[in-house]
Length: 165
Image 1 (spheres, one colour):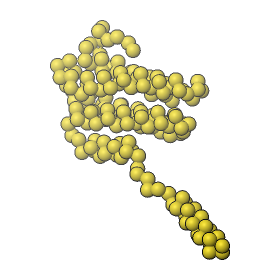
Image 2 (cartoon, helix red, strand yellow):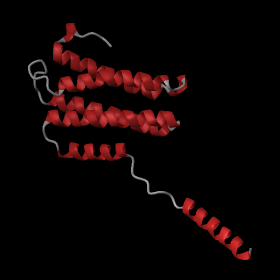
Image 3 (cartoon, one colour):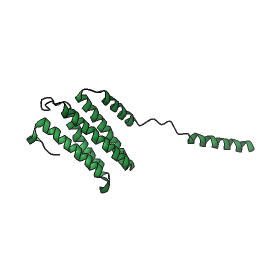
Image 4 (cartoon, one colour):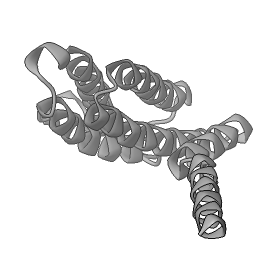
């Protein structure tokens, strides 16, 4: 009986030790992809390729923003939104600095405009998941995305043909 009790005690302690050791956790694939895209951006020299990379970065950041909202991590949400706005602004500046006529050579301009159209809708959905008081940072990011999109539409099609969001 004594040996049985010692065996049960030993198994209990071993079981506790096994549960205390955290399972090997793989890093979040989205964060790994985000870093890969940032590395790719640092190497890219072609403005269209840089813009497409910034689009990928901005989309990953929106997913991470959504996750932060879902978990109630408002500081994390704000950080991701700030990075998102910086990414789309950089993409716009990259394309505008090329001096290319967006109407004749729309590559990059069109890609960014299409992505921003999706982003504006996604940011609305993200904002709808928050209380009224918490929505301001999301609304500011949405307004900036809409502003950049409108400028791209003007570059692509000219002023009178632009339809507001």
